[in-house]
Image (cartoon, rainbow, N blue to C red):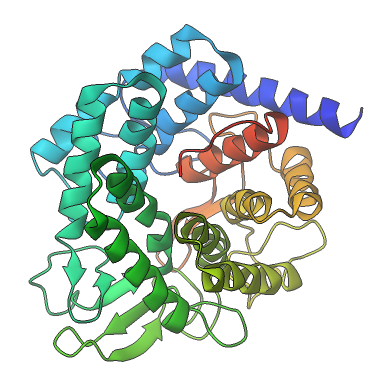
Length: 360
């Protein structure tokens, strides 16, 4: 089979799994990860990953033009609108993940006014998490909790596109200014001189002084969590696309160079880049593929994507096997992940549909 044939077959296989999951979950939500290779029903629209399910449905629609996927994806707007209206589990920087894929995409594809309203409400709520004078968007948790204040994480680079979109549709520059300042702080502090990254970083909430880098899901504070490094590749290049700031493009390339230099032979990283002989994280590889494609590195991206197709694609309820959510806490280790599935399908969409316009 040619590379084109292999990719086409992977798309067909992925859509088949999505069809089975759609029959099982419909307008409800799978869990963050599989349990013994099967997704379980999540009790409600809660947590940071639920939008990766409608995100997959929007990708399926973009790939096929099938109105069934359009209806299914659109059907999630009401749940996300209710979630932001009711302030249900929204004290997080991950509002960008949640509302870009569920509501911004719905508005862009269909003009749905409720989707636009909910996404703008989410952007406003995200703005409430800005911590002055550090100029960062605080990660998760109660803003009044001293143990939480002053922390952001590298994942947050993927949440700024919601704010850039809000400026585009409202003409209010405040959203984009906050996003750009936040990305600048991460460029200067969460990215280490050697091109590796911290998972988390703390600033003094009163003075804005940068304090220290730590990890939550990596091996150690001074190691390099693979998924965080992949967020750095994709997140910095997206912030460059929105701002035109060449330093963000340079940061993305530094992240990519470090990641590529620490990959095993098949291109799918161990869950922490400081380790070998441990579990892989296929979700980190899928994120990195999307980032490398956005960076204009198709050969590197497609080599990793080929490994995912050949060695990690699932016949279960996840699109990808062998992901890791949080190894130190023993959560979702060597399982499928909802975000890994989304970014794998986004990578397949990017490769098979070069004219596709991504949601970020």
